[in-house]
Image 1 (tube, rainbow, N blue to C red):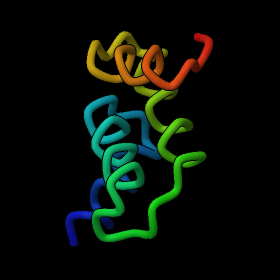
Image 2 (image 1 turned 60 degrees about the vertical axis):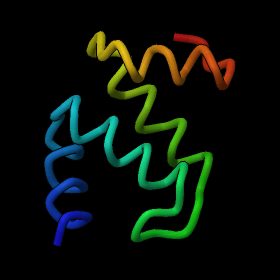
Image 3 (image 1 turned 45 degrees about the vertical axis):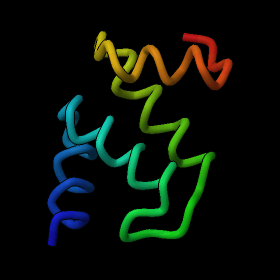
Image 4 (image 1 turned 90 degrees about the vertical axis):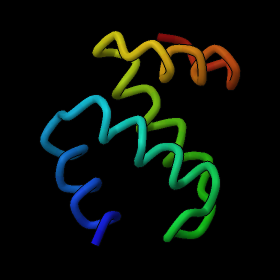
Length: 64
């Protein structure tokens, strides 16, 4: 259920949910590991000035 609600909140623009969903994809928590999706969701959160997501984008070399 956590994945369902996190995906729903992320799709509706919640920056914490976007960060958490990215982490789920990065670590393979409840989903298959998918770094493309992880980078996508980290980027979405970073564009809303989420500090941890910005750090992850820098770590992965994602341009904001």
